[in-house]
Length: 219
Image (cartoon, rainbow, N blue to C red; front, side, top):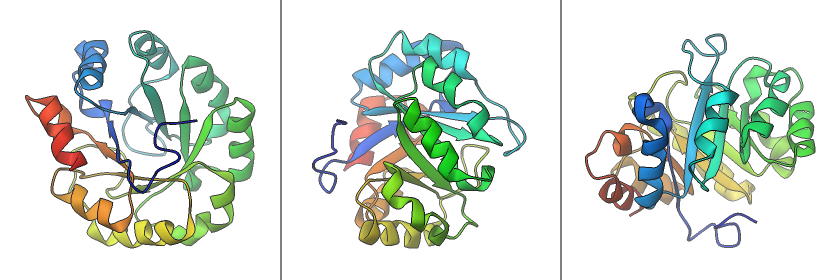
C-alpha cells in the first residue's frame, strides 16, 4: 500500500518532475529531492509522436532507480503505450500513467499494467473532457489532470482545468494528480479543488533550496 492511501484528504504528495532536473547529474538530482522531502519522483516519457518532444526511455529509469528507494511515478506521453508497458515495468516503474488519447483500448492498457503488478494511472490533456475517463475510474489508482499542454516544461497554469479536479474529488476515491504550472501559489488552488498529488518541475529544480521549495508547495 502506498503512503497516503488511507488518508488522501490530508496527505499531499509532492512529485518533482525530473524533466526540469539537470540530466547531466540526474542520479544526484533525484537523491537531492529525496533528501529534501519529496514523496515520489515523476518521470515524463515523451516519444516525439504523441507530443512534440523526446525525453528518456526505460534504460535511464533502470539506472537511476538504483540510487533511490523513492516511488517512481512514470508518465507515458507516448503513442500506443501498450507496446512498452513491460519494458517500463521491468525498469522499475511503480506507477505507470498513460494518456487516454494515445490508445485505441484503454481497458487493454490497464489490464497490461495490472498484469505487470504496477499501479495504474490515466491522464487527460487539457482539451479532453473528463467524462471520457468516467467508466474507467473504478479500474485505475490515479487520474492525472494536465494543466498545461503536454510536451514541454515551464508553461503557464490553466485554471480552467480545476473543474476536472473538482469533478474527480466528487466521483473518484483514488489519487488526483495535477501536472503543469504547479508552484507555491497554484498549489493552494489545486489542493482546495481536491488535488492530492502535485507534480512540480521548475518550481523545485529551478530553486536553490529544494527542501524549502517542496515545503512551500506542500503548504
